[in-house]
Length: 184
Image (cartoon, rainbow, N blue to C red; front, side):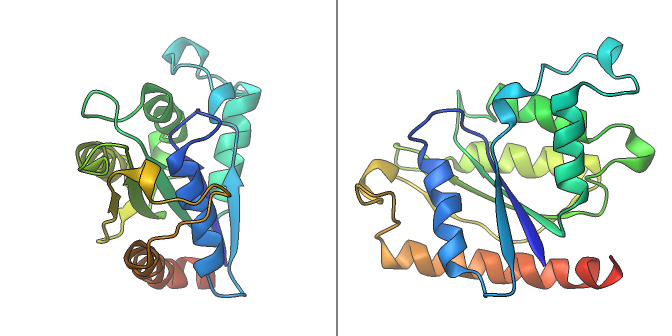
């Protein structure tokens, strides 16, 4: 089984990217996690540019999502919502609507922020957007507040309670993805 992990943060030292890297340690050996790093290259969504062939970065995004059995998205919170670059990438991925690579794709959403609430508002917004695209959003939540205190200098998630929560989110996601992986 393959999980595609997408960080909604473009920042080099992103807490959300660290959170996705922590997921690698917690997955069963037979599950591959690919950390997709092409978000910065995806252009803003413009229907005038939504033609065949798609822009190269968009084609890579769509192919990566299509090739995965499930998605794990970690989002920061910008002004109580989803970062614009992540939203634009999802707009691209959701088209064409009838054959969208997000349709019926199992997805789990997690988030980290330096504030106390761990990006809960952006996670709620992201779940809403994903549901609107036809994705199967897992009933799992994880908010990492005060993220700057939760990771070691080497990027490891050091809070054992958060490691347990992340493991639970992954178990729920993998259970959702099982039928999807079997059908592929």
